[in-house]
Length: 122
Length: 111
Image 1 (tube, chains in turn blue, cyan):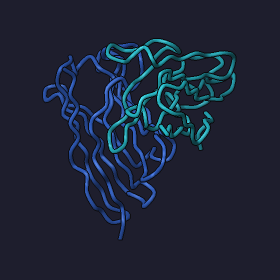
Image 2 (image 1 turned 90 degrees about the horizontal axis):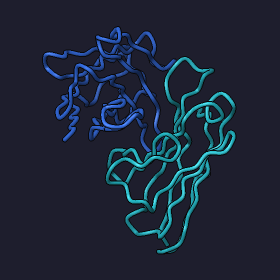
Image 3 (image 1 turned 180 degrees about the vertical axis):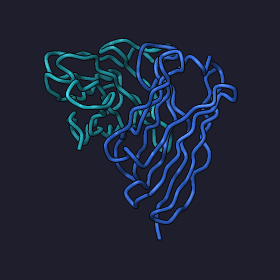
């Protein structure tokens, strides 16, 4: 069974940093492309960024609002995905979801974690 | 601001058929697959439809997807109370620098 468990969310002041983690199990993590998707309170879904598998180059892509501030990385030895968030803004307040891409079916975001809440406020 | 437009709400009584639209353009829906996600209250989204009209294992056949031109639709037949949720479409957009974009979302209410 595919499982994704996010952690690391919390309250941070504007300009601060936070690192989210996503522990994966139930599939071959090293072969998977992974994405982060966020949802601001009461709002819709927004793609944050993606990292490809190392065999596919391990490259990353980011949405315009977070480019240059957020960094996605992975540790395949620990089956863990990370999201390093720097220079946080109040508009980054959201639930952050870790998602898989095409693990079981050929689809983006075919599995989701339960999410972790990040609140950016002074 | 999303490039995929959905009606903010839809509703029906138990047993009815409800349809949700997703309107895009030639750079997204018109040339790429459409995906649908269901988000039950207080939970994470779940993949409901992939590649326009395919259902992952475990998704009831009451849910069906279709695409025509630059629009797509999700139909829920035999509406049940447990279908009350937010529904989002998504598609790759060739004109943007990132992967799939999401629709604005539709809240389905079972009356």
